[in-house]
Amino acid sequence: MKLLFIADPLQSFKIYKDTTFAMMREAQRRGHTLTVCEPQHITWQRGSKVTARVQDIRLTGDATHWYEAQPQRSAALADFDAVLMRKDPPFDSEYFYATHLLEQAERDGARVFNKPSALRDHPEKLAIMEFPQFIGPTLVTRDAEDIRRFHAEHQDIILKPLDGMGGMGIFRVGPDGLNLGSITETLNRHGAQSVMVQKFLPEIVEGDKRVLIIGGKPVPFCLARIPQGSEVRGNLAAGGKGVARPLSARDREIGEALGPVLQSRGLLLAGVDVIGDCVTEINVTSPTCMVEIFQQTGFDAAAMFIKAVETACGVPPNPPIAYNPDEP
Image (cartoon, rainbow, N blue to C red; front, side, top):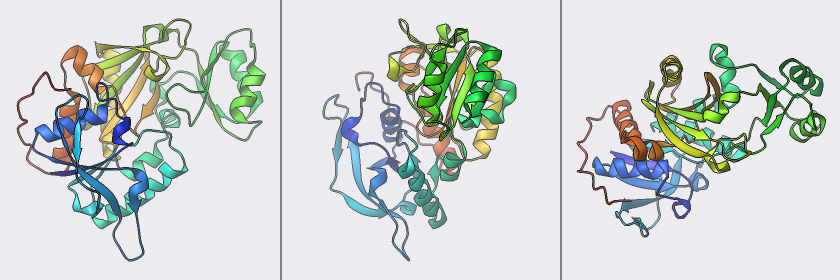
């Protein structure tokens, strides 16, 4: 297959832990060709198909000079067998507009994963509210009085912006309510923006678990991201320590319940965050943690993903080239 990865600049990749790189490496092993672009390279002109300025690349196996790139060229997205949207958050206005361009590319005949409309319809924090049986006490509001009432009921709470990422902007307020008013004003901008408020889950000390769902099925291992020191955030970007573990019975229940629903909506890959027994987020833009799971357990989620892309495209799977453990 000819695969187009829409991603961040290649020079920004940390290939020792990058999930998109792991996907590319597995795709190349399976005989697929790799092409890349960034969202700002996508263009739609009147009367034409959606195109992009793209570069064909080949992975070298070298840890430093890890890819070779051909000169940039213009190509219609519909000319590729699959388009993989792997741009990292934030889901800002430009990301929003990119999903509309990708949706037009679908009308041109492109297969896009994850489905652009599904990316728009599943804001990563708000999407959990559709599954109340799997979440803890949660409130979404702009109203400071609502937040105060929620705090009075639950005493120990977490507040976070709906558009945050990587643990940014997350606050914990304990029973004393210290700084609740100031934190609320900071996050809701005096009532102008909505905030998510959740009961604090003490199981965070055991890790914020990333459960990957691929092709409607949960990966059998999760990555528990454990807060360090005085932090309440387990996010790897916030310094959390990643420890791979087999799924618990509850993790599997969640994955098997959400998986078919998400797949039916065009979400081939999702990262469900679970603290204790409760879902806290459903990540669909660019889920990660595949490399850490592989390094610690040997389970290759990137291979599972590329196989799922092959299946979704109706392409017979190619046998992978033998894996060289010395490759980065």
